[in-house]
Amino acid sequence: MNKPLAELEETYSYQQHVDSGSLYPGIDYKTLPDITQPCFAVEDGTVRNYYGKDGLLYSVLTGITGEWFYVHLSGFIHPDGAQLKAGDNVGYCGESGNTEGPHLHLGLRINGVYVDPGLYLDYNEDMEETNKILKEINKTLIALQDSVQKYRMLEVSKELVDPELYVFKEVEIETGVVKSDQLVGTRYRTKDGDWSEWDMSGASYGNVRTYEVNKILYQECIGTSGDRYIRKSEDGMKWSKWELSV
Ligand SMILES: [Zn+2]
Image 1 (spheres, rainbow, N blue to C red):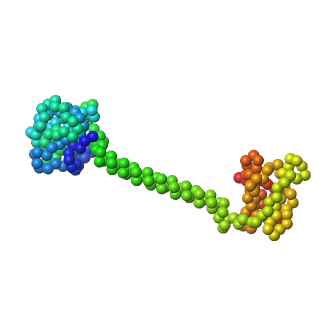
Image 2 (spheres, rainbow, N blue to C red):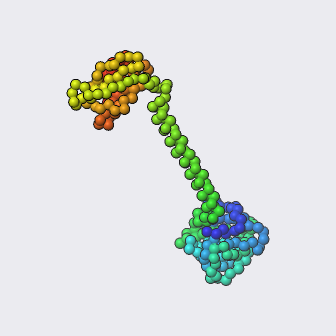
Image 3 (cartoon, helix red, strand yellow):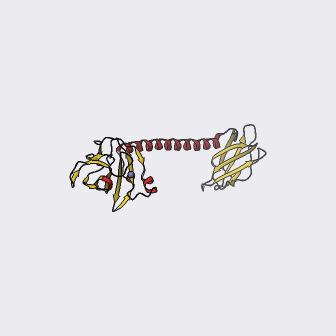
């Protein structure tokens, strides 16, 4: 869509026209008190010129979007039915008809209904501006995702290694087959302690993690079924039974 004027300064909006009860709502743009200032075709279309009340001159450009009304002109350029390309001069701006000063009233009628032309005027510059804003928003989103990711990693690492939460004991774990072919047992020995008794269970204790919280020694492991088991040793020597951890 092309600009209807070289410089667009909106002086009265579509909504203001609607609010004031205008029968032909549009957008008013400031123009110069110069009767040779051109206004331009916003899109390809056919032009027709009209004479209204109080000496009003206006042109209607019928394009693919609808009928574009260029109102309060000082003069016409083209005969009725002239085919214009977007950007061609439609007419000259002015203050004909009932106005308080020079301005272009730009209206848009689609299927007989006046609509807000601003919704259809997607100038290239505006799209560039919009794209710039979208790029900024994207950057912010990426940064946000990044910090969420970092936060999650921090939480995970805090859970695993935060020394204030978990004091890892130097524990020796011994795993072996005990007493029967089916049962796997585990026993542990703290750095300065004795071996515990063999603790037997159907679970295969892989990757046993031993840590201390509030002076209580815990062990966690993943069982063969994928469940997480936990057990604790309050006196630092004797382990409780493995329990499914919640
Ligand atoms: Zn107006």
